[in-house]
Length: 534
Ligand code: SF4
Ligand code: SF4
Image 1 (cartoon, helix red, strand yellow):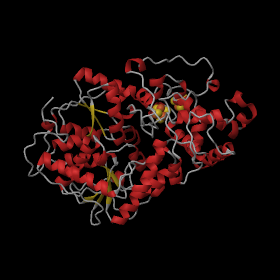
Image 2 (image 1 turned 90 degrees about the horizontal axis):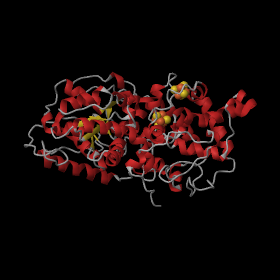
Image 3 (image 1 turned 90 degrees about the vertical axis):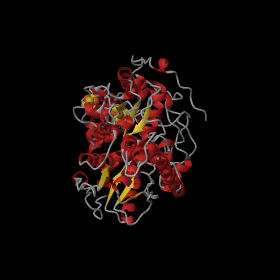
Image 4 (image 1 turned 30 degrees about the horizontal axis):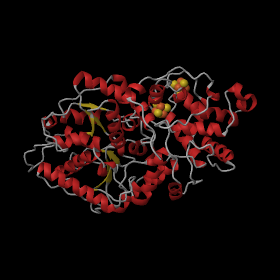
């Protein structure tokens, strides 16, 4: 299948905000190439034991649904209304104030009213009213209810896979309605009848097959880490260890597999390895828990649980004291908000204490898992690292708060603290586009594929415009972040909207600035670019 041609930026920026002439319930979905994601391949559904594996695409007239698909969806909805109080609450309490309406990057970038969070939720809320409320059963459309039809199901698919579960809209909702949770339930229901996207399910299937979403075998992972150790030696003259599946380790280190396998994540991974060597940390990578990213978040609560369980299982097998996690986005949403409930309590682990500073990470008392930026910021605060920010003088950096570490964890200060200690040229983007109000990369939650490129560029446009602003004001040339999906998707986004800006992790910055014992004179940064060069 060939990918749709994406319009040029000056064409894409002409966004039509006038609503369609027909009322929203009578405006059918147009599966226009470039705005939707391919259906999950049958082999991936079978690998995960999911229903209705078959060959189909969303643009087909016949979706080959099970005969009783409607009953399956309504039963699934009933079950979830009973199981998740938040879902029932979010179905009932929206007062349609409209505070969220213009806060979604997909609405801003597309002008499609069904990408307003309030209307996205209404797609499912209208069905809830029809089948689960007295008013909807008695008064139908007068009470804002509508029947569940195939067209409605197609609309769910289109718009619940045009939501990156970023939760920006929730920040502005006076009732705290969490659209990401509604989208997750919408996707769960679609999954019950086999309607899902390949870029969410293939990574999940790969995680079960080989431990990571890219499907790399343990030998491949070992080779990549060894290559990185070679590169570190080449740049610094220092040979770092590559501990893998080490049973006597104190700490299990889990990071997204993109950090081992794809630039620019590899430079971030080199930064971690240099840091751990320098402080003499007794840690290990794992080939079984070789993926921090939890692709279950894009599919169902059950899949979140199944994938997340591997981290605790491996920590138990290796007998470590606690777990340290790398720079990732949705991995941290799962760890921070679901891990303990779904797979805890991890009583076999200890409350995390830094072996270098003695700091007790009380916030991780329950999960036993610490974020790398908390760990590193603590090292800097306790003067345990020698840093030379001058080595990043060729970098003019701005920082993108990745949605999940920012909004789900409140990790605003720690990455900035590391940046301020490792780079002299740091420029913030506009206030209403950072911290809890940060704009999404436009391609999280399984949407970072090639076929969906027009929608990615539309959804990423608000973030890109904020970057363009600091490029024009300060000559910014790098965009920092603490998420592996961001490192991949923002690179494409910058190439499209703001060419000349490359993307990096915060620990790449740290690796550049870290003065290691016995190192040789550094001539280049971790990318092999001249220090102090333009
Ligand atoms: S969660 Fe994010 S992508 Fe989804 S509706 Fe809200 S702002 Fe839009
Ligand atoms: S801000 Fe909240 S209450 Fe207001 S329309 Fe949006 S979801 Fe409903």
